[in-house]
Image (cartoon, rainbow, N blue to C red):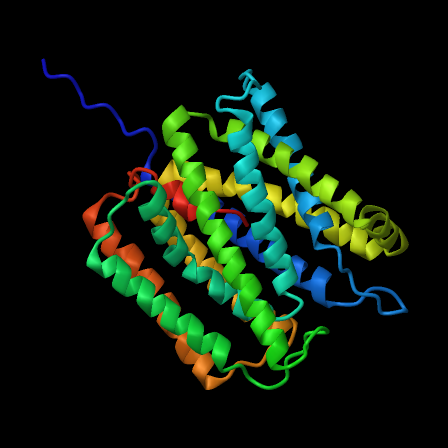
Length: 342
């Protein structure tokens, strides 16, 4: 008698609810994260209208929360806390990640959140450069073409802003040049961070929580040292102590950043990198639209064209790659390249 085929691990209905859980989780946590980081860095607090200037303090709080949660996850799963790779390699990722995140927060002082968010879409360009240099990875011609289209779209969005920029640090062209320089620094270091993370995962077969724990722990130590050396630690604590709403914003920012990491890992593990990339592209579009409405960022028609080129190229990249492979089977190493940080 012929044996009955095994039932799938979960039905289409279960897959639908898992997908809905992933989409809602990523969209809610990372959209809230985007709104909060713009609010903290650009909106004044209190009757005296003080601006929060200590971006490294935000890095410290985010990494401290993520480190504590990842340590708890390792202990709950009864997995060892011992480092798998040499500690200096974790520190290398941490240094790059700290510079990345600091550039991201500092850039909000000089360019609007929609400009920053769209510029992040150009991440594929430095990732391709670093992957070629470090991993000797070869990309196809259409990958370079789509990356070029994304770069053109970002250039249109940045070079043709609408009037009415409400940045408190705005100083005309000087502000734009410095903001763009910070975003270039963000993209370059973030591309290195993702590529080196991929190299560690491949070379040492480490658990994702193991890498998150040690890189964020190193980031905590390094960012705390930087705050003490700059003399900003006590001033940052004094600021959040005097402004309870700022304290709440920083605490919520750290919480949603950590939750976002969980949803990102869950989505990649369950549905693969392609589904994750599509969700993240949609999240960036929603973040830009929400920021434009919430913080009153007007967009020029050139920026509309640039945004259409960028998001059209990103969706085209996802669909083209989807034809070459199943969504549940991400390319080797691609999930880490797409993951990054919130």
